[in-house]
Length: 291
Length: 291
Image 1 (cartoon, each protein chain N blue to C red):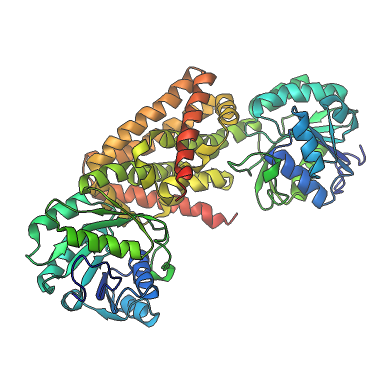
Image 2: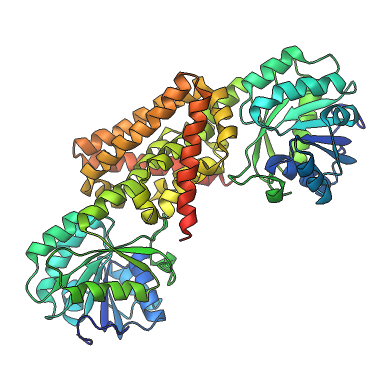
């Protein structure tokens, strides 16, 4: 480590980004722009893509996972969620003592609980989930300001050291994010409602549209279904990895939607207006947060 | 009429806008900007608001409905959908022979079929629905370019004269819109799927969000629920006025969502990915239309 654990310094030493896509590329650019790293290493499965990321200056050097792990003070896994555990285990075996690992995955319990049990002593893992992203993909769309004023959830387990938790928090804060600390399980419960269920609903709605009506889909339909353009493989792994919580959120949503259905079936205009008013009020509370 | 019916001229004479809100105000500004009217009259229930719209130059003069109807060649009802029929009937009684009436309502069958039977001879009604708008309200948000490159559905009934249909189409075309002609019933069937159901789904989802999770609602949740901020009274009237078609669309959506639920319950990652892929493909077909 270039810095002692728990340091409030903004020098995080050598950072390895595993998975240089939209999120990984944005972290790399942000770390370089803000002078947080002595070097940013990139790891990727596609050698040509990795070389292109290096050529464009997104990362300083492209390496394989073991080589990057040997050189890194901080490793950040930005791969699809179903590849984080295996990658982090492999990296940890090659890491120097004192190295710190985090990720940017949209689900946390499965990842954090596995790595809690399966990392060697001397290498810490603290889970992260920056609430930033886009239906766009690839480092070509990376943005050094992607995390500014966005929430980043950090999800320590009980035996994480306070120093490691604070260092990961300091990293995201240094990228401009607002750090919120939660247990992995509380994260997955909340995100099922705020992200995973909305994705499934948007996809179900997009899947309903009749081809003949496409030219009549205006901004309302487009906004409501925008996230359905996200990568199917990435999202299948997220929904699958959090399926019980997503199913629970779906049940709550079903009850909400049933209220609308009943109001329509009963021809109850007053009830319908009340439901719409409650939804509007709830929706506006989000904007009122101003983030 | 300043122009013979069916003229392709872009002079629509004196235009009366009934309901000077976001849509009415935008039509007024666009008509003035493009030189389509010799005068734009405004009609509104709130005298102070109407005077403010006049003061800001959105309309040239504020009048009551009967006075505006007596002076207008073209009347456009931009009131909430549940006030269009009564207003159009009242206006028609005061209109000069040859006057033409249209509207901008989001539902069409109830309005067009009522007015088909209940207008005096010499006054034509042809329904319209410009697919433009916003969750914002009021003429303060009016935009002269709101209709450019947007679809406007024109919904003639069987006994509408071709001249009247063409004149209404020419008006929207002059505002920059792309006119699509459909029966009122076909419109309501399609819009249930592309607009009314999405609104209800967005509202049901917004209503599901737990207060404690608001700070974790990122861009995905916000996009998906944006339209839930629309005016509850306006939208209750729209959903209520098209309730059978909305319920039918809801049944189709329920089947789509059930596919996702089953894939999660069965732990079927392959099926889940296929559903997400189909949704993405369908969603991208809309963007591919480029409008």
